[in-house]
Every structure is written in structure tokens, then in C-alpha cells.
Length: 602
Image 1 (cartoon, rainbow, N blue to C red):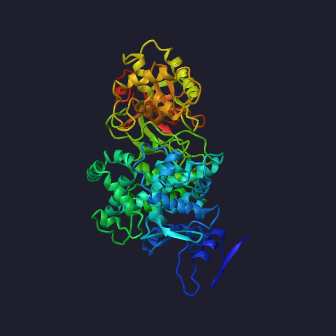
Image 2 (tube, rainbow, N blue to C red):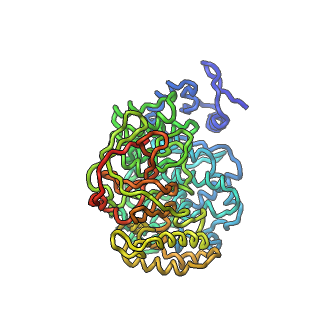
Image 3 (cartoon, helix red, strand yellow):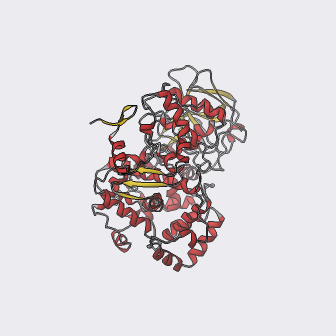
């Protein structure tokens, strides 16, 4: 059914969701001034849309408040919101670990896992608003945000307090059924809400401190561990809270009172109303930050971020102006070209994977348009840019755009060619816990590849090369070089799991997979093992094939797998970053066959 709103200038079409929001927000006996993008911007005029997009952040930051209409009450959303409010005020300080058993849920006054309210809760988080790309500026830049769903109305701070707990304790997965699509949508919605809530509090130091102190007093061990490597002031306060558990008990009681002032409790002044800004996020970081978000028009995956980026001057903003007439591929190439000019070439390459995409985007950019599934998201070996990797030396990258808008030219050298690859990921997870049968199959394949080697070019023992390679020779949390005792962990785990076929219990998982080593394996679980003609081994993207080359690019922290182009003679396609044991510290430059050259990628 089509809907319209009648104005002095005629009838304006509107969606069912806009009609629902207007009906909910209108006042019976007063005029109310609202800005609604779908009505205030002529959606049929692409030039007007392009102009207005650049003004939208100013509009949102100037408004007295933003009202988020999540939709009408449906699927018992009233019960889901009551549960959300309950979670926001519940202290999980006494919980050991991150697993909420039925007995733990009862202890915290929450429904047991198989209760249907958790299904309604998941359905609530699967609502489309939570996954929209435009919610970032709507939510983050406004002076205040009111959330509305059906007849319920509440503050955004309820979501701030609840999202981190829902995520930490995996509450969206408490009700287990076969609704995979709904679970995925809910997970994406929760992840984006968690990100934008964090960004909103980062805009004010005192609000951020209150948020972090609340987490310390309500989430205990997991929050204390996070505080150890961060802000010194927060770390000091964490030590005080940890040494006196009674503070948490007192705080939990006070939180049940609506009038409780957390700012006064922590001795901090309340933030002054004013314009908010994103906390120093540059354009490329924003692109990856919201990679799971959805947009009706694929171009909006980039256009929606323009005025939010902290690293663009007016000239660059004009170069990146929205143009809805431009082909999607041309939009992506235009944005990538500006970022290459800003010295972001390597950061782009680190995140690129060679995969089919509907827009024929350049392989060296990757897919910035298709929303990323967070469950099957691929991680790259350069994340999060560990200091121990310097494969491309200490020089600055030498990169420039080619004559065609989709061509990137980078200096480097060919290292070797792949002549053997593993059958799949080094540790297949099947979207859930470690399954010994799958793990053994993968490990047996890895063993078979190593059995083809009699020695290693660096002179290291093959067993040491194996266990270091499988984790990229780094620790999972601190990203330092893996200590020698990790080898003992791997040996023990390999023997424990050998021959097992039945899925283990939670206790068995920890017994068979020592956390320190297994975390490293998990972080690189979408890579597969390869062997090169020169006898080196490494971790490469699962799309890598026999015949692909490994190159080292000047200034890159990791080597890259590249493929001869079948479409453009003499050019290459970027397959993705990789780990090759023995060349991660610039050793390739000292090899006799090293020769610097230019690579053209499309």
C-alpha cells in the first residue's frame, strides 16, 4: 500500500515506516517541527540528494535531539525492551568467565536460555534500523537521542549500558533454533549499536569515564583485564574496585534507583550539552568500521561517511562529493584514489581479499560495497599491524594510481611462487566450537605438507617452523613474537586431539586447546598453509592457488599473494596479505635474486 503526506506543495510519497513514525510522533494540539530525511530531501532528485548529504551532519548536530523510531510494537517487543532495561541495570560482577548457564541466569534474575523471551529479544535486535549505514551520524552527532518503539520511549543510555553485556555474554545466542538469518541480522545490529554507543561516549571524557567505571563495577574480570592495557587512570581505578568488591555491591543497589546520578557517585561533572563529533576516525577506518552496515543505494556505503571522517580537507571533500549518477565501481575507484594520495595504500592492501563481487571492483581495493557477514568475516595477517612484522623494510611505500582509474602501481619485488596449498583453513570452526574431527583433518593435511620438506631455508627445525607458522609467529593478545614455550603447548594439544572425533564439552575444549596457543590459531583460522618452490611455508588467503606468486612490497609489513591477470597482460590481481616464515623482517631484500620492480594491480 502506498502512503502520502499532503503539503501546500502537493502530495509527497512516503514509506510505511515513515508514516508509522509520523503517527507516533505527532502532537494532537501542538505543532511539532521534525526533520525526516525521507521527506525533507527530494528522493527523486539526485542532485539535491548529493547537496543535502554534505549538510546532514550539520543538521543532526544542530537539532535539539534525535528521535529514533525503531518501529511499531511487534513480536513481543514490549517484553524484549523490558529485558533490555533489566540487562542494562544488572551487575554481572560475580560471574566467573563469560558463559551464562541457566543457574547463572536465574541468579541474576534473568529468564533461562530456552525461554521464548530470548527469541523475542533476538527478533528485536534484528530490526532493520540497527543495520542502516545512516544511523551512524543520526545517533552519534545529535546532542541527545531518544529511542522509541511502539508506545515505549527511553534514553539511548539504556542501550549503552546493555549492549556491551549482551555482546560479552553472547545473549543473542541463548535461544538456540534454526533461525540463522535472524540471528545474523541481530548480531550485525548489536555490533553496530555497540560501535556507535562507544563513539558517542568517546566524544566526552567524563561520560567515557563513567561508562568505563560502570563496566568495571558490573562486569568484573573481563572489564578488569581490558583495563590493564589501556588508560592509566582507568587502570588505577580498576585496581581500587578489584581490591574492594563491596564497592560493586553498593553500586548495584544504587543502580536500581532511577534518580541515581553516576557522575556524582564517581565525582565527575556532567557533560555540557553541545555539538558532538566522532572521536578522530579517518575515512578508511570508517569504511572498515561499518563494513557490516546496509544501504538501499550501494553508493551510500561511502557517501554516508563523508562528513564524519576527521582526515578530509575541503578540497578532498569536493573530490569525494556524492554523485548518484556515477557507476558504483567508479565511485569506489574515486574514493580509493584519494586515499592512495593520502598515503593509505598499504592499509587498503592489508584488507583486500580476491573474491567475486557484483561491481567488478579492483582486486587491490577489495569489496567496500557488499555488507560483511561478521560471523564469516575474514581476518588478515596484518591485523592489527603487529610491530614484529617488517617484511617490506622501513622505507615508505612507493605507490601511485595508474593511467586507468582502477589501476594501482606499487614498488616491490617477486619473492617466490606457490607450488602447494592446503585443502582449506588451518583450523575449520564450522561457525561454532572446535570440532576435533575437522581439526584433525586440517592438521593431518598440514603434517603432510611438512613431510615433503627435509630442511628449512632458515636452518630452523621443521617442528618449530610448523608451530610458529600456524599462529603467524605471534601472541594473540599482545602481538609479540611467540615465546619458545608455545611449542610445548602445540605439541601437547596435537597429541591430545589426535584421533578424537566427537565434539567435546566446554571443559574438553579448554583441556585440548590451551588458550594462549589456540587464540593465535583462531585469529588466523581463515588462512591456509602453502609451500613455495623455494621450500618456504606460510599462511595465505583461502583463495590462493598453486601458481600464485608471493611478492614483497616496499614499506608493507607483510608479503602479499598476487596472481597473473588473465584480462590485462603484464598486470596482477591482489589475492591478499600473507605470512611466510623466514621473510617477515625484511630478509627478502638480502636474497641473491631480489630485484626491485613495479607491480600494476587492477
